[in-house]
Picture (tube, rainbow, N blue to C red):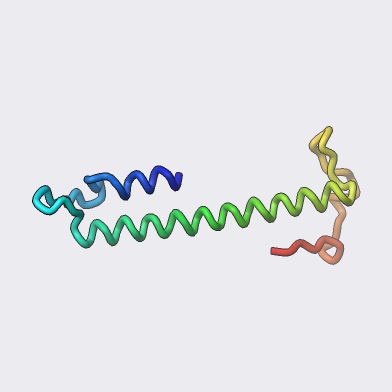
Length: 92
């Protein structure tokens, strides 16, 4: 997805405003601002998704180490369903 946005930033036409000067070969200021804000949003989204993935991997590792999750069956054990908040400590 980031590659697609980088490609969009290099193109010579904006679907949002369509303001591109053939004389100067540059986007208008508001178009550039929109593209930069879009890129910033996508970078923040990517960062959030990477943090979420890291959290899920740590959770999986914890469950595998404690024997609460089976890779073979892909299911949690019965005792896992009864875990209290005091016994489950995940670092966010």
